[in-house]
Length: 316
Image 1 (spheres, rainbow, N blue to C red):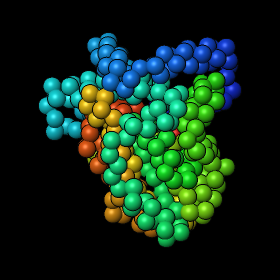
Image 2 (cartoon, rainbow, N blue to C red):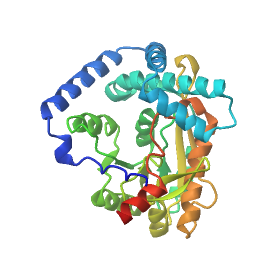
Image 3 (spheres, helix red, strand yellow):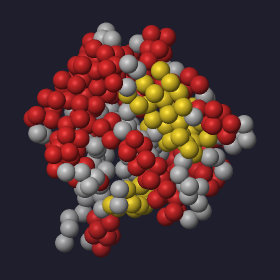
Image 4 (cartoon, rainbow, N blue to C red):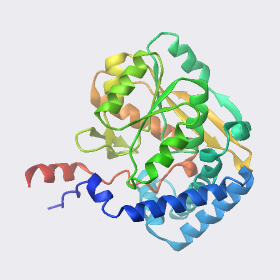
């Protein structure tokens, strides 16, 4: 019998050693401060080095990335899968180091990183209908930079998951809200805030490829494999009639900046049938991933929970 997935850590468990949390937050602030002094090309060179070292160590991030790629892209040869895992960790290193400026530098100092923008007019046109719009942002490219840019253009409320390290929360919320985003936690109050934002004809931003808490998702195919998928998007669309789009800040080579893409959602995302809508949601994430496979966060345990885990948990 397959063992049930361990329950998520409670807030009390996450704060049992607050001094460690504060120390980690202090170290993170120091690292971001140092990274913020780098130009974007320099930040990407340093990030590339960190990513190469991470891949060479062959630790858990390497193993999870390789397992996910093998599962999702079996058409690639073993060598190609390994190269993609290596490239994705290099891109993850760039994400980390560029975050110094993304989170700390004045927006006027980094706004020139936007090289081109595609599809934003469609969101403006959708909002003209008065129902707001939903922007789905997978963990691909520079989602942190893309979030700051989007909030510069549109009134934005974004759902976020409070970090495991409580001392990080102030740092994260201050950084992500500094261009105007209203951040709301992923709980009942946060969902209510998203509904109110849509009814004010604003933009609601959700990261669709995070595994939701038990009871907040259902299984749907992702690259042909069952993945526990957030049902909130379907609920919001059915309750408000708001259209959905996908957002992606593609990282350009050699630190040249970013191409901001706002893409229409796949057909079926607005379907009344939940299974059809969830399949379309994951299909939209797949489309983003296939555009730039190396820039996707393959090191995230997207398939951690499986249908047999839920069955076991209910029968034990």
